Length: 249
Ligand SMILES: Cc1cc2nc3c(=O)[nH]c(=O)nc-3n(C[C@H](O)[C@H](O)[C@H](O)COP(=O)(O)O)c2cc1C
Image: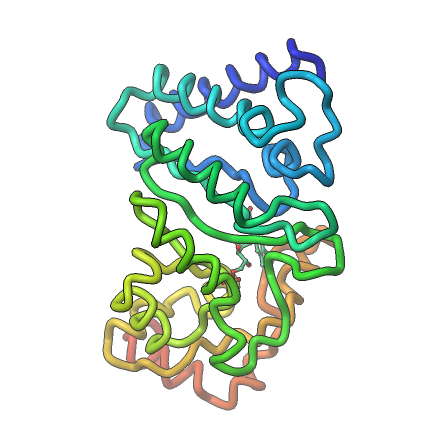
């Protein structure tokens, strides 16, 4: 990207934040994780630039800080701006925890309202953002250790994502101060009513199998949907739906 491309992109993000606010959205989140463009700027594995946007972490994070300043101007100072950030890329020469913490300090100083902590780079076959085989509580919250490091140093709200499936664990993470909020993705593809279910007192684990079939389906152009057949839920779904009053059967 030329410097002009970068300036245009910064302005495009700023305009998008203004449009999101005008359209009534509660806030915006900048995606700086998972190997997408801004994550590539942060990552020494991708960012080979020799100009003011490459090299040191100050330079690699510059585009995002410019964006936040520009977004604040179009969306006003009190409009929530969140950033989804990799704690580590989990690839050779990728973003490491120290540099990620350094960026988080800068984001907090720039007035970012919260950080959603994730990690990994898509399509690397390594420790990717949506890990499979989350079949025990020990495998859940796979960025937990990094979240602890963030909570020790960074004093804006931390939203933790990545393999959280158990109500008890979600509660423990918040009660222990390891995260301020819990974020989930795949569980809602299988059970859109999961939060209502937990709120109603049924605290059994999310039914999501973490097999990433939903992701594959989306990538193949067949739409993001859960491919676990309803009959394989063994009736649990029907029971849950009755509890939530969503379906009569
Ligand atoms: C089908 C699908 C689409 C996703 N799309 C996005 C996305 O647009 N932006 C994003 O930040 N993460 C996206 N993710 C990653 C999730 O937000 C989340 O970080 C990851 O799946 C780990 O959380 P989970 O174990 O609760 O699914 C997607 C994941 C899936 C399965």
